[in-house]
Amino acid sequence: MILNSFIEEKSIKLSLHKPSYDHWYTFKLGSSKYHLTINLLDVENRIRIALWINNDKETYDKLFTNKDKIESIYGEKLEWDRKDSRKASWVADYLSDFS
Image 1 (tube, rainbow, N blue to C red):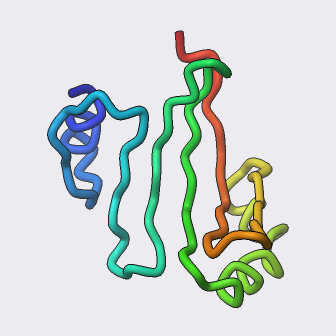
Image 2: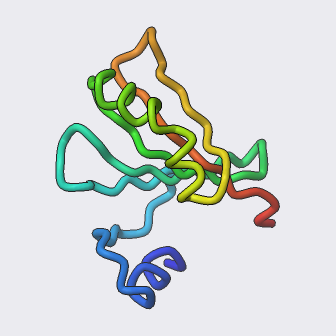
């Protein structure tokens, strides 16, 4: 799998997964409150990379308070979605034109 090879080559500290037919990939980040996802959005021809914050609006709000600083360090605008009607929130970026 290309993603696993990339993770190994770059010595990124993420767990590797067996290849599957799912359109998503999830990485643990040391706490059950957070995880990283990579989603293939076929119809949109994009890949979403998101930090999911599970059932913790307070943490999301703290991050959002520092939105400008986080985006300045990251170097790009991010999509912020508090998802008030759901338990989880996310901060995401997208890769486009990967075809």
